[in-house]
Length: 214
Image 1 (tube, helix red, strand yellow):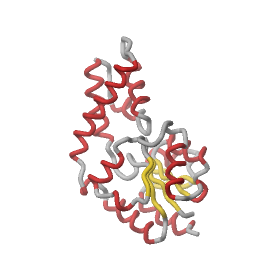
Image 2 (tube, helix red, strand yellow):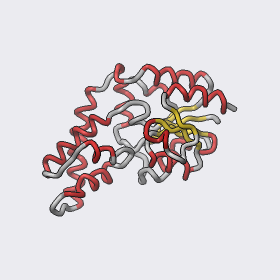
Image 3 (tube, helix red, strand yellow):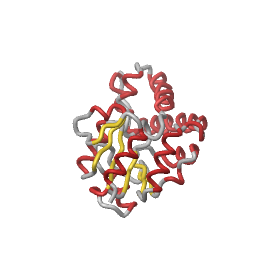
């Protein structure tokens, strides 16, 4: 194994609270119910698909242009909230793990459907750990389609079978498996049957990396 591709949200950090607050503003504007259980369904899902979930109980019709405006409005709220992120936002274990992988010669990438990935990496001081970023700006299909990970592997000049994908969502694991990647699951994905290596703590990736380095 030569590469590790990390999902962003839920793996390297959690911006779940920020997404929740931004989508809640949109839901309140539309007068539709929105709580944590609905927000959990938006993990790893594109902005457009997330809006469709938010709109499930909306009593009305919206044009394509109106939906685009709502997606953009949500993103503006979210980008304002990103200013609350900093170096201290990141668990020290994340930097410890990334540094270890770099020292062992692994090529590292981020594979995320978020269009704000690079901004988040910059604000948290993580950008220099990664050799490549594949995100919502360079893909057309969201997870469980494997496109985001296939692009990441391409940017690393590696084959899918030479890379681990680290995910916290079942849709992300499905995407990795269908793309021919090996999988490491943390959080909810740790209990998923398709996950090859379930972990409870990100530092456990170090052991997996040592075992599989070629």
